[in-house]
Image (cartoon, rainbow, N blue to C red):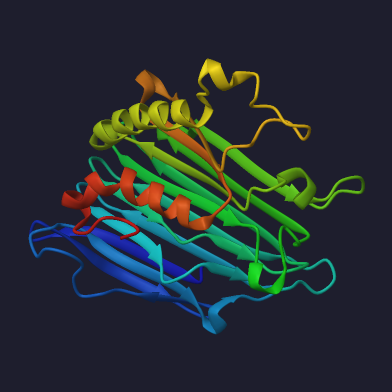
Length: 291
């Protein structure tokens, strides 16, 4: 049974939250207005009692964004996943339907798993070719101030996007699990954040184009080394690793979607990247994401 239900529909020509339900451990907060009064967007903030997800918790949210509506779902802070007891997992399930010419923007803060935590997340999106969708899904290495870096037991995040008649458009799964031969921290080395940004739909085409051009520039600068320095670039430990790595690729019919994958050494650098790349969405949302 869902712990949260949201329905956004057009009333008197405006995107309006017509149903909002939540129960423990989930709480949904809906501000009266975010940004300009002329902006047609509903913002919803989700949080959990106790400031995080306790071992054994199962949070399930169902969202419907009606035709021509705009909805933004975000969080007040990072999603903390507390320590596990035995083999028990903490779970979050999210399912959304996005109507014709509608826009759903899912822009949470990152997930932060405590030492020994086990976390499963599954997100399902159903939309049409004329629907629009933004998804940010990211995780940090843990509580640095406590000396925890990639010290959790299990993290799995699945994002599936379907078109009409359950036609798969994008199927993705990220799994981080402590292995018998290598740990997560050994595999991740110095990178402390991994993130994924997905943009789908005609309203986001300009943002997609801008992102692709910007990534070419950023990655070109990261990996470019003048030929005069080439023979000096390698040390005994090998070439210096970039602090921020990102790649992108189009998917779907006529390249309707774009996925960006990021690995970075600091959370701040990812925040700045997302804020800069999504800033052009301010007229649609009322304020710039991650501002």
